[in-house]
Image (tube, rainbow, N blue to C red; front, side, top):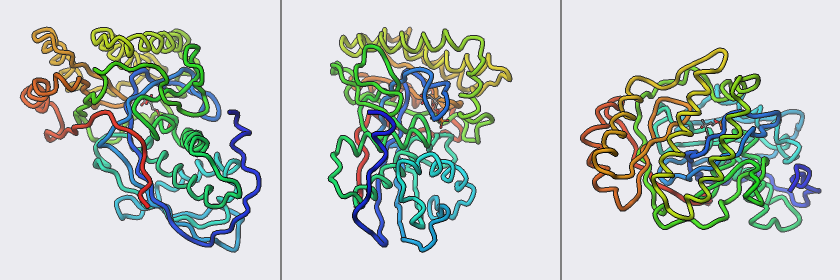
Amino acid sequence: MKEKDFIPKTYSKTLNSGNVTWSSPSNIALVKYWGKKEDQIPTNPSISFTLDTCKTTTKLSYLEKVNSDDFSLEVFLEGEKKDDFKPKIFTFFKRIEKYLPFLKNYHFKIETTNSFPHSSGIASSASGMSALALCLMSLERSLSKIKLSDEYFMQKASFLARLGSGSASRSLEGDLIVWGEHAEILNSSNLFGVKYPFKVHEIFKNYHDTILLVDKGEKQVSSTVGHNLMNNHPFANLRFVQAHDNLSKLIKVFKTGNLNEFIAIVESEALSLHAMMMTSMPYFILMKPNTLEIINKIWSFRKETGLHVCFTLDAGANVHVLYPENEAKKTIKFINSELVAYCQNGHYICDRIGFVAKKIN
Ligand code: DP6
């Protein structure tokens, strides 16, 4: 599929008003997306586990308007009007108008809720943009003369979500999603996420992700600024090669179920991501002292017990603790007794691998 394949022909049906609701999962990258070109094209491929508990539910209400000169929308988060969210959605609408030419014909009310607290430091842009893209695709489906296949529907929804936030392209289906071209993954694309196509060992089914909320404050540096700092970054090209290599290695690991290899790749990816931040110009650090305390505790516990708990990080101080189902009991005990003390107000979220986004009505 190319960009032009997502430009619709004519719409035949008319709809005056209505609403649609979708619930979309969050995701955690194992190989990280860090760096992008124009139009939200990633500088390297990434792969993520879709999550189950962390999700965003969005209701999109639409009302046809007389004047179609400009976009018209209002946004609510947890029932509260959020005018400060509007610029981001206007930018998103501008980027996707070519692919959804009906956008200026309606007034939109966007009502969104997250399963996790907004102030948890968990980025809601992936699940949020994916839920909104799915709602818009449902509207397109209702307006279309031809029947849109489910495959096209999901692919275009991921394509649109990417234009809202890169990692959102991986937040529609499960349980492992690849975004960005990779030589060994035939249908991989820079334009949208695809389901990981190869064999995945049983050990990765039901994998756990306990998210330790180390710092719930606003990030000092946004992901968008961080991505842009990869342009002219002294280590950028090597980092992009490393991401390709790590994804190649993961293909083997997913097949064999070699957890020691899995841990080495995933932890190295997390630290490489933060190393890129620390070596940008200007440089910045998103980890907090408690992030490092937790990492050291995980390493000691792993050494003592031989269990396969590991960590990953996204663009913040929170720690995602990953472990297999068959070691969950002992690992949860360790998390409760040794790690929760490093969380802000003792807060954490128990999540695990999840699956596809759901239409609610
Ligand atoms: C560190 O998708 O939030 O979580 O495309 O600018 O919206 P934008 O960035 P975003 O970047 C996420 C970066 C990451 C790694 C990842 O999820 O792959």
